[in-house]
Every structure is written in structure tokens, then in C-alpha cells.
Length: 299
Image: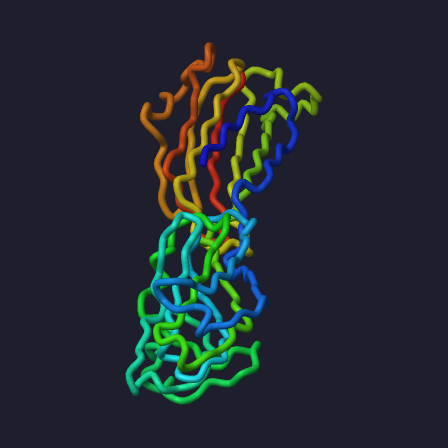
């Protein structure tokens, strides 16, 4: 992000800049409740039951969960795949038509952070037939993290089939796709200008008196509601030609440096845009403030 701050010198006013980045890091849910038969009508390799989730929110994904309630005797017969708008596919269940798949129903949240793999450990008894709320948080056969860093917007496709159709049947009742945005910083910048008149003249035109000191403060805030550290903060400010540069300091940033070319030498005449203040690669923690302070003299 780059903040190019060039307010008029003569207007000794506070210049405020709106938030540059703002997004929620809470999961956004998309639900499909169109029921459909699984079994005889949906044999694997021939016909899938297809359900879609239309996502209009466009953000970079950091986490994906999928909640499902499916009634089906011998749930091990069911093969479930999720396909992103980028055509990335995650095989979430792998059909098991042996005796170990002889358990009824899915009432689950497929989550890479689940303790047990689906149909193992604590998930080896029949699931309930009513959701939400969903009963069991389990890991899918293949991780949903395959979708991380993809963009969310578009049509997500759920494909379900029965690997042993004609023996046990069931019904898809509800699916909830939960997408979590990549955490983002929520930052704003404010510039203040103060003229110090050591003579105490009380003149309203203190910006016209040679030798008066000017203090610029560029304050960058990463808000209390931010969900991430702000990084790659670049600030550029060109001092007015009526000044001579004295010094520049930074405080409050985790890191960051005044850029190359280096700061102007002390007492540099700012005519012709000679006094460019550049602060690069700033890092600012959430709920914190960084400040660039620049002092100069009126010529």
C-alpha cells in the first residue's frame, strides 16, 4: 500500500484519509437446502447429484469448511467432492462399500481442524437426521486447505454419488459452505501540520515568517478491529518549496526504513521538489499507531 501525502502547506489543517483495507475474518456461510435422492439415481461414474453454492463475495480464502446432513443407510457408499470456481477439486469422502461402511447418515462439519478423520475414532456410529445444528466435526479424506489462497467468488459445486447404487438409498437435505477471508489490516492515515513561531508574534501568517519551524506528523493507525498486522506500508511526502528540510523520524512501527534515495541532508532547500520523504516497508501491529514526524524551516 502506498500513501502519497501532498496537502497544501498554507492550509494548516488536519487532512484525513479513509481506511485503505478493511475486511472481516469471520466465516461467511452459503447454504443449499434443495433436497435430492442419492442411491439408484446417482451411481458413481454415471450420474452425480449436483448442488451449487453461488458466492458473490470476492475475497482471498484462508479457510473452508463444509457442513452436510445426508440421510443414507450404509453411508460408506457415498462419494463426495467439492469443486471451487477455479475448478480445484477436493475428494472429501472416499466410498467404502465394505462392512466397515455400514453406518447410517452424515450429520457433519468437514473441517481440516477436526480431531477424527471421517468415519473413524469417535465418528463410527450413526449420525442424526436433523440439522442444523450439525453434530460432528471431522476431517475430510483430503484437506479442504487445497482451496486456501483462491478467490471466493463464483459457483462452488458439490457432487455426490453412490458407489453401490441400487442397494441402499438416501437423501441430501442440506449443505453449508463456510468460507473465511484471509485476515486483513484496517488502516487509516492522518496528516497534521503545526507551525511554531518562536517570536510569539501572534501573527496569523506564521507560515510566512522566515525561520519559523514547521512540524509535519503523518499518523498511520491499524484499527482495534483489524484482524492482521499491516505490512508493506509505503509513505511518500514531498515538502513545499518554501521550506528547508531539517529532520525526519519514525516511531510506533514494528519495522520500516526511510527509503533510498536517503532523506535530504539537513538544511536542504526544498525548491524544485528536492525534499521527498519516503518511508518504505512499514509494519504496524493491529490496534496500534505509527508516526512519521518531519521538521522543516520556513525560508
